[in-house]
Amino acid sequence: MLDRFNPCEGRVTVPTREINEGIMDNYAYAAPSSVAETVALLADHASAGRQTQILAGGTDVLVQMRAPGHTPRTIVDIKALAETNRFEISAAGIYIGSAVPSAVINENAQLQEILPGLLEAADLIGSTQIQGRATICGNLCNASPAGDSIPAMIAAGAVCEIATHSGSRDLPVEEFVVGVGRNALAAGEFLLGLKLPMPASNTKDAYLRFTPRTEMDIAVAGVGVSLTVEGKQCVNARVAIGAVAPTARLVPAAAQALIGTELDAQALQMAGEACKAAASPISDKRGTVEYRKKVVAVLCRRAVAIAQQRVQGG
Amino acid sequence: MARLQVETTINGEVREFLCDAEQSMLDVLRDELGLTGTKEGCGTGDCGACSVLVDGRLVCSCLMLGVESSGKSVETIEGIAGDEGLHPLQRQFLENAALQCGICTPGFIVAAKALLAKDPNPDEETIRYWLAGNLCRCTGYDKIVRAVQDAAAEMSHPG
Image (cartoon, rainbow over all chains, first blue to last red; front, top):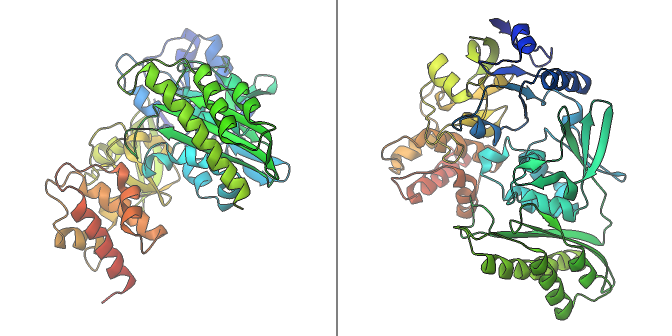
């Protein structure tokens, strides 16, 4: 079969016979031009028992496609949609569409000022080349326990906007990842983007991870923190841990240890201990259970100090 | 086989090609278009040998589908040298002996060109971080960094 492709036309190149019979010998590619069309395409495939794969930056998807035993499916490219390309910063909040590459958000001077922690997490993922394609929404959907952007999103209070067959639904990031490599998207759904509240000028975030190397490495442990400080007192906090459990986790006990304090050494110690208690890591080549638990507490204390410095230092 | 017909711009020239849905941009460049200057190292986005620019953005062509280049502008190592001869980066890689086996070189030069377009006078740390996604087994990187610095100097002060 020969078909002319133009993403703007949103042509779908799946032979009807394959859809009807639910079999697929070859990969197919579709770049729908509207959310409705995308959802309908996903629904058609689901009802026919055929696999689909959402494609945005593709830096995980293309590697997975080459893994042994990967079965042909329809690649559904969501980069032609206006909604997934939305990248907006206003008093009402921040929206990062699921097709917006990391490099684009990392270069944004306003976002560097208001969400430095989210961007330092995004900037840790992959090389310059990877960041030119990769999206933080893809990092979230890939649902690796060590995905660096996820604890930072949770700390920043990000909410997923998910396209569904009947419209859309919102889900906090901390509820989106449900297991190693598994997310909360039901068949026929896909991630449209992330909504984040606009941080007040006295709210700042930070993300720290530990890796043996400074670049191109996977986190042994990571901590995302967002603090609101009035005068010297911490009045609000969110703390999330990564790479020390099957999913990134919000740690309310760590936030409680910080709120109402002046972020003194004892408060930091207690927040670190709360992170340690919330961690349930595995031992692997990157570190042992004991080591990861110790490191996550240290990272928590240091990330809190960085976020505090960001509020108070200017 | 379902083949897709794609029109794109490569090194300033409009090109049409046929590809399979799952075929990477790297394989399209090498196998469909005969542009073999772009190399395959790892095929998983770790080594940077396949670096190209897509609408001015540095990417690994092994991690992009060929069909995704539809309507885009792609620049490969073949587009770096001008009519008047080698690009300063190419010349400085030669001057500084910044290559041995040469497999990584096209990727380094394309990546370095993207850096100099963004930052015409990068310091050593900036160069090393920018090029952290390009791996070289031969040179130990020092000569590559010096070549990029010398090219930057040459481009800022031509002649």
